[in-house]
Length: 150
Image 1 (cartoon, rainbow, N blue to C red):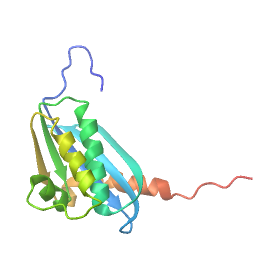
Image 2 (image 1 turned 30 degrees about the vertical axis):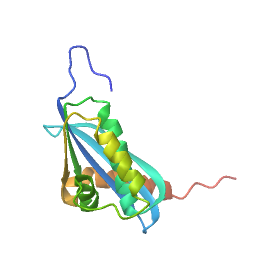
Image 3 (image 1 turned 120 degrees about the vertical axis):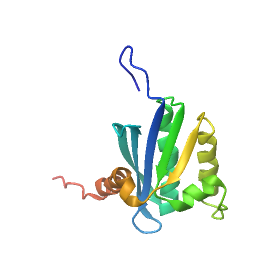
Image 4 (image 1 turned 90 degrees about the horizontal axis):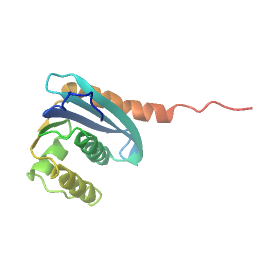
């Protein structure tokens, strides 16, 4: 991220992440939205992640979102996800039983440790519409039929 001369990065930013899979497992995408505390969108992005379960996609979205948020060097990061499983696992209230999720959980915890202060909050899908739409867009764009040549 570059900022204009004299402009300082926001002290607190909000990260909204979502992962979506069509089928479980199936084609999957992630969506990310970074905002300031006034709700101004600083950045949004999406990416197709291949075949994954919904929970894998949720973790992949979180990890990529954390890496992107780190570019702002916030003093505080507020993270919002609509995956209660991921939120509870990060808080240590749920065990990570699935062996496919363990390395993703470990990576998310490691990246989170690089932030001076953060919160992770579960929100309803309605409060996570931007990231949800971007995650689905990633899948839609991948599934578009390719134009024929010749």
